[in-house]
Image (cartoon, rainbow, N blue to C red):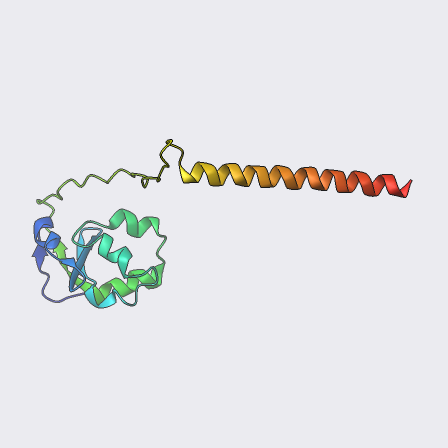
Length: 139
């Protein structure tokens, strides 16, 4: 790990939140992962989503093994001052995309689902009659 043993606040780390300057906090330690963005197996967007934040939970949930934990040493920037606290971050609620509707208020997704249902029913009826006719012709 770094010889400096620098200590950062959560606010200081939160300023490093771009693709040109990307830091994350994992288990009360700050890591400058800017140079790892292109090499991260999950893609740089995963790290950018956690840039400037405490990513401990995400890191643990991803099931990183010992190799990933050893790699952290290479990107170590310093410790997090335990007397500082992270700003609460509200996770954005999922908002489904707006589905276009025609002038009668019927969405195109509804029409597609209806056509899929009719296709499946048509195939089922066709298979039923095919099997029935082939068993009748054998008798």
